[in-house]
Length: 400
Image 1 (tube, helix red, strand yellow):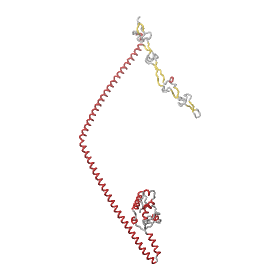
Image 2 (cartoon, rainbow, N blue to C red):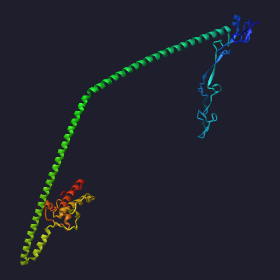
Image 3 (cartoon, rainbow, N blue to C red):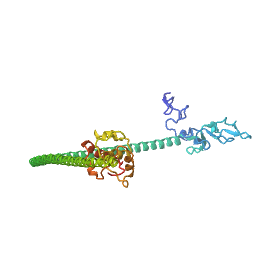
Image 4 (tube, one colour):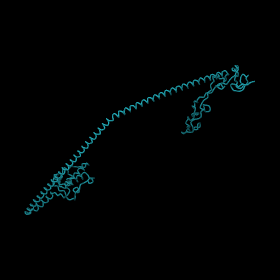
């Protein structure tokens, strides 16, 4: 008896058998076997129902849930105002979930199998039909997948083609733009070359104008310098002339004063001799004292002077530094006092009182110009310098 291979389990069986003794698969197309032989349902594996898993509602799939006694705090009140560690969760605040099996985080739900009608068995014909349907569905799915893949490939090819065309269009536009820019630069360079002689002529004209302006400026500076030199020479000549005239007036005043003194002294001597003869010695003595008190001598002793050096040398800022306004007034007016100027008590009573207390002070004139004419050049310089120093630093109490 020849043997053949079972189409299902590939084992050797007799060619006369209607079904395979091992797997029950019909052999040689037996219609009775196809209606009587049963196979396990491929969906429920012969159980008639299948399991469905869902996330646990208590622990949300985390396997842990909140501790009930301590409400997740991990401690409970001890009744004395303090807290103790929760004995249910040991202070962790959570325990393993008791709703899902073995705290796995999901629940198992059993559903009836609709393929086999909850019997778990299918006849060979039903099993073959189900296999064919699923094979057909899988084929259709494969065809749909292939169609989608081809459609996606076609779409990608079209997209790549469109991108390539867009890239080519952009490249052509870029080439055209660069050509236009190059053409514009060439035209601009040509215009620049055409305008070069004009620019050079304008630059030469500006250079000549600048040279002319510089020449005029140098000429004006030279004329200004010449005018300044002439003005300085004229001022020096006028100053020298004024100094000579001032010196001549001063010498004439001194000579006139000396002649007046000599004349008065001669008159006094004559009157004295006459009075000696007449016995008026007492009157002569009083007249001599009056003459000595009103006469002025330019050589005053340095004893009692505030600044005796003002008549012999020029003062500097170091000599005036640190002095008050009254001390500066005394230094400046002491020069007038040495030459016999009489200070008015109404205008500067403080200076009149100060110089009136000095033994060397002998006032003999109320005219300031007369007293100024007796100054030497050093004293004149010192008067001007002290006055300017006071005006510059705001230490001018009164004006002389």
